Length: 298
Image (cartoon, rainbow, N blue to C red; front, side, top):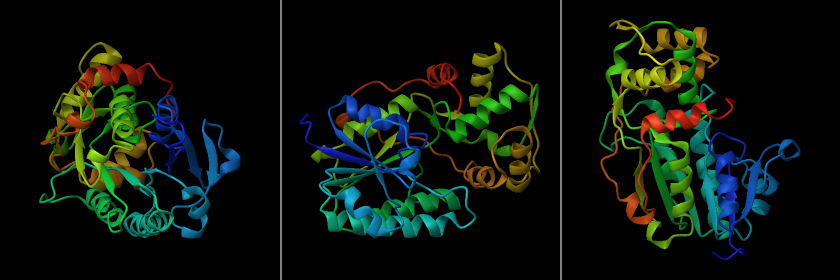
């Protein structure tokens, strides 16, 4: 790969972004790390200031960029859907104006025709808005990304760590297909600058489609060496569930509520064509948990 190719990573200080930047550097990319507070950035790459909602601030950051990674969202705000839509429109227009060669978006897994939650509908809307200009978009749709510091993984880890037994709502029987952080980063790097990935949507996941209850039990076996007593109850609403999460984890109520709203929707991989572009065997959930536990929690 030519070292002259430039990638811009939005959300460079976030859970996925801070792992993606060094991975791109390892592959020979020149990487610009976009952040609203460049003075605070202490990671690798060339730090650039900018806000995805402010097109004027993006012009210097997007100049001569071959691939722009869009990894930002506003899940901790009450009006996150509106915020994310505005930001996607602004970023797409700025990327088009700058002549960016490709946008790579990390969105949410879920069938287009499914009864998606507000959170997943918002992710899908962002995907469509980013694709609304002449810039080719590659969308990777993921369910839970398992890695130290990820919100969904932190909920799992802290529940297992803090509770000797659990009373859980019915959504724990919903199936999902988690993906290891390493695999998510590998797929993101693999589609960058790849013409065969332009204008395409890929589903990414690990080897296992599991219920949330099964995920909790696998995590418990890895962390504690045994399974947890779990009792399901029918009346634990999303609002009550979010209060419960805020009580027993350090996840704030609003973020917890927005995530929990999606847990009633089955999100499993139905298309494995990503492996044609980025070959390799996905990681199992148990191995992803082992890797996450081996890393510092942030």
